[in-house]
Length: 377
Image (cartoon, rainbow, N blue to C red; front, side, top):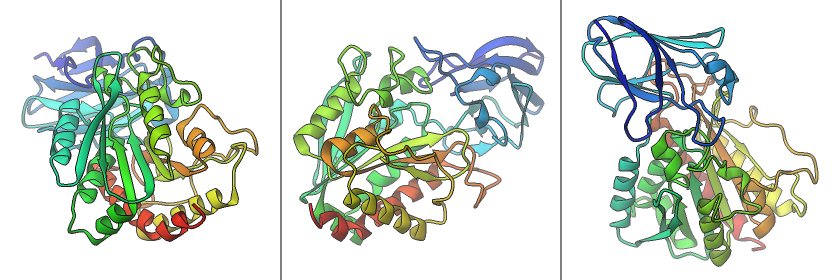
């Protein structure tokens, strides 16, 4: 009995190194023109009713090796429901997964994938809703559109954008939740938000990397979230297109949605250390975080990244660049690949549905700080 393992599909990534019956040694493939790797997504058949053992052998040199301890891989029988593989372990640079299922094929991924086909369905369905307009902001190296949805008629310019790092698929699940809420005109929070704000939403900043099965880069190996100070058509047309659109509209509030491999919590990263930081910006950032913590048991403000010292912000990142460029309140939301260890779920871990719930809470928090956001604008 021999396993059949493949990844030649949208967002797929794995390479078979060795096979022996119901066991296989695998490697994650690096992003094209880059050394980054950690995202995997593949399917397995030929092992129905038997215990299958899979070993990813090159984990030690992955982009974030601290992401492997306490991590459990995701498995699906239908590509809709993704559960965690209980027998996932990490030792000596090898991630080992053992499982038994009653059917073939099964699908294995680093996190529940968000395919480009699902992306197109999302954009199409939301664009068809009343009061929503669609625009392609530009083209990627592979010729894909950078999709932007606009809704609301208020004076506050709000930008939501996700998947600069394509392997962080929870970011687009968050986007699906945000768009579902904002398209629901019977939701009282939505009614206020659409009255007071104009939302411009880019659900996927990096469609090329998403389709190619990359962790962190676009089609030419560029990390988009290090391009915001000086984007170019040659290296980062995605950032150039979005930043140009932001320059036209202005920005009052912005959220950049990501996933973090190592930290088992949801948290915000801000713009500390930018040259012209103001008290208004820091107060708004603090108010949003405190409000979100009250609203969502899945959010906390203790764990997170170290803050930059005054004048030492990395201005190539979107959150810092936008805060400096527009004097706005901007932030990066990070969600875990593992789980929220303060409120764990043994079956699903951090999941698509929880990402969507967190998006709802973020929009509720935004509604709560609207008076502060409008004041002194």
